[in-house]
Image (cartoon, rainbow, N blue to C red; front, side, top):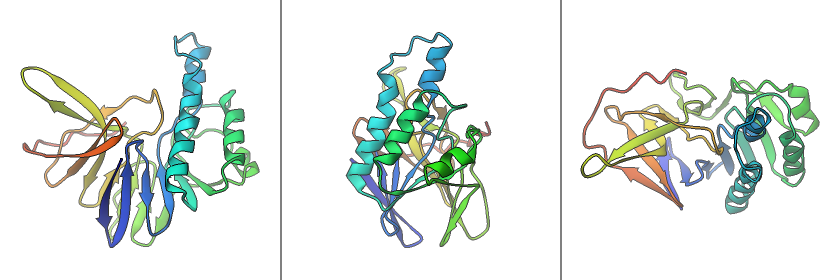
Length: 223
């Protein structure tokens, strides 16, 4: 269900949902939920089932109940766009969630911070804790290990013949880890392994380290 990794003497548990639990801080890190996206698509005629709206909230509740963190940190793109009916579901979810909630603002987070403040959610541009830098977009800063989202990373695995599968993943280099998108219907962006990187794929209810046998040039992952 989880896979642990040690970074700068801190332990992080990668969960199959795409969330990351910082053990010493009792902090649950989640990126790119994109709440409201399903309702946004449905508004413009996309054939997305209504029950898909509830899936994100059920998944959030499930992973919070699993780790029982003291705080929850969203690494941006919590909401996909403007306010819609899913905001009221979010309000209900927050009221039922006793943990401190912090939002590192992402490029999709256009809802007024005042709306979050009404729910006692702190909105910030980035967070530095000990030797870790937590942002929405991937960043490089001397002396800090960066956790970020935004990319929705995935890895393409090839089998016999021309068979292949693309799986969301945690993508780690020497100074950075890009966290998978948590939300349903978010899409993914395939990254190729770079020299010295580590990849942890999400498959069902497991997090699987992916052996990197062939080192390829890393793609530009700007979005």
